[in-house]
Image (cartoon, rainbow, N blue to C red; front, side, top):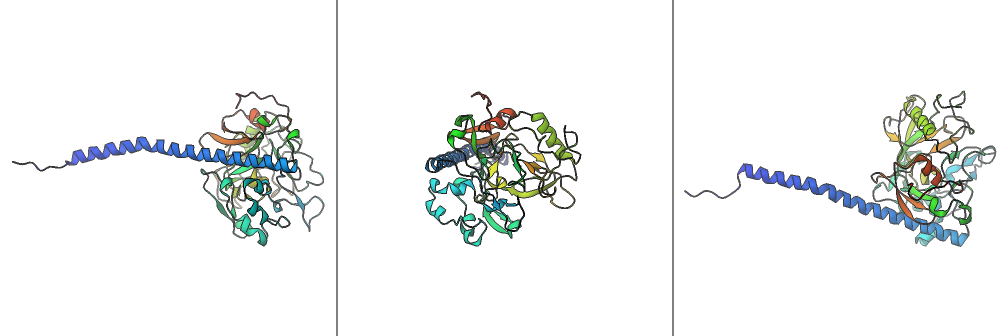
Length: 373
């Protein structure tokens, strides 16, 4: 009797199981290869931007300002239009083979002016990491405008203080230590720590939400009676006070009612020179996030991991905001970092906090060994 040729049900199931096992073994390798390619492109983006910054410095005898603070026409002394000015990326565009793009910008107007909407809404490929796919974000606070994002930020040192009193009483913060900042430019000669030991740029996820106006926990030493840090007891720039910072973060993540988390906020506009939009600090190690607690009065992203700032100007009557805007990425385990000498290195999330903060300063005088990061 002739037997019919073909697979039995058991044989078919065995073949399917073998194929499934092979796919499960190969898929991580494929994903890893893709991420390696994306990370390599990210490294190339940072190298090109670092080179552009150096070409800008060679031409203009200084690196570009991060932003220019413009006095508000209706405000009193010390009141500034912080979000009005163009970023360092916009200022260095001609050196990134974007001369035609640069010439279409009207720097006499803000980036949000109607005459500039075409350029401010235009995504630039070298400003977006392939692992960070958001190229445009609908910003409801600006009438629903679609702004082009960036995955990168210039270094604002190891701590950043923003105040409505820039022109008068605000004298705190690491403004004399950071590579970039408002209303000043750096030269190569100013980088006393050495260009190979000073961070120029790193990554920042587009649309990454963050805490706004988190008052400091009362358990932190020297906290004022109002529960806020004063300029004299914010963790000192350049110090390795990781314990104090960790305590502050712990207080923020549990102090229900003192926090509101908003988003998307970070790096939603490459054209904006504000630290939220095109900067970062080394106050916290890479990808250091805290868990948001939503306030009853708004914002629904409680429980999300977000970046943080403290004593915000929004809720504290114009007081300074001590911003900790960590470098963030979607690369597993760390971030790509461009140094002031033009080199790009991958720095792990587990880097020593003191070392990381020291790399954020230009003249802190710290001694950093080559194998410490």
